[in-house]
Image 1 (cartoon, helix red, strand yellow):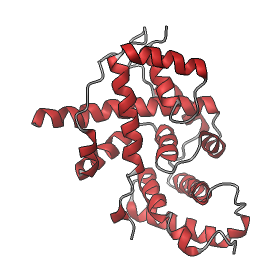
Image 2 (cartoon, rainbow over the protein chains, first blue to last red; image 1 turned 90 degrees about the vertical axis):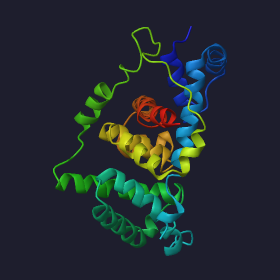
Image 3 (cartoon, each protein chain N blue to C red; image 1 turned 180 degrees about the vertical axis):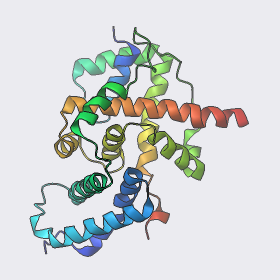
Image 4 (cartoon, chains in turn red, green; image 1 turned 120 degrees about the vertical axis):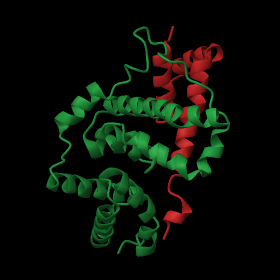
Length: 61
Length: 191
């Protein structure tokens, strides 16, 4: 059984590399029953979004 | 000059280089000088651009060297030992209990997208970045701001892929927690 710490590492890794099949299956199983990790999943996605727009048009002189 | 590299498409990367430099060295004037040096070096060295890396990756690599030179001169060098140490201390131990569960349960962030247009949110984000270790912050910004791949980051910083992904995990989880405490929790209380 993966812990929330393990799952958060996979959620982070997923933003940098393609996960293997078993990693994806175990991740999915955990996320279905874990509210905390589901929130973290959305929030790490939001963090990426925040940085993709971090350099604002106003910074472009 | 290489057909792919004109001064106008170098200039297009300037805002990103400048943002990265400001977040690395802290002072805008210093950052502007460093970025200017990078663009000059890039114009001069355009022939050495192989075209295999993206232009931004190539410019970022030059900037990293300039930042390292600047730190050396300012006596703020981030040594390999310090990097190794950061791997030990830039910890997420406070975030998880010994059994791997959350020490404090992640909260729901309501309408986070609304924050993206709020100037104070950018400030909160920068304050949270400032709480990461130097190398943790550097790896995170290279990945999320400059869009480098793990392989490129490892090569530039001399880290292993494992160390890189560990630093990114810690950085992301610490930023998440810092934003929750320093921004989203306060914002929801005000409503």
